[in-house]
Length: 159
Image 1: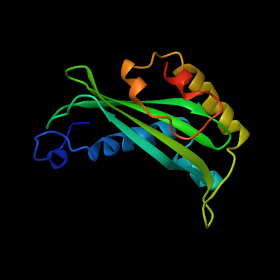
Image 2 (image 1 turned 120 degrees about the vertical axis):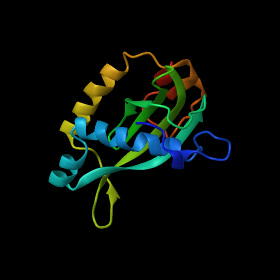
Image 3 (image 1 turned 45 degrees about the vertical axis):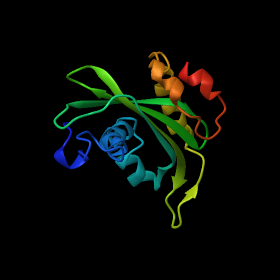
Image 4 (image 1 turned 135 degrees about the vertical axis):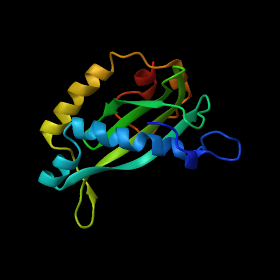
């Protein structure tokens, strides 16, 4: 994506509120690729909702900057998925920010209610997470706060 004019604030850089907007489409694309998106929701009546999020700002992004967002699964359990997004300035090759989500698996209802993921979905996400765990974390990941409480220690996940 390219940073649009409406994201620029009076300091002539991307306003803090748009860093989560930058991960929206990549998050949806990842969920669809993992078969945990639109088609999964249509056939199961289940999805996931964001419980918590955090952005760590590292370097500014400016108008017209080309941005690439990577998505990885840090950890998961029966109901929760912990995602990390790296927001990268493509042209200059620097990490501009990290964003993380803790999501909860839900049956859409009405009303929506948390529930365990189907076994096949969890197994699929665990295989993906194992591949993601092989990719080194950026040093800036040490600035992330722990979201929620999962089986594995968060400190181990960001090492």
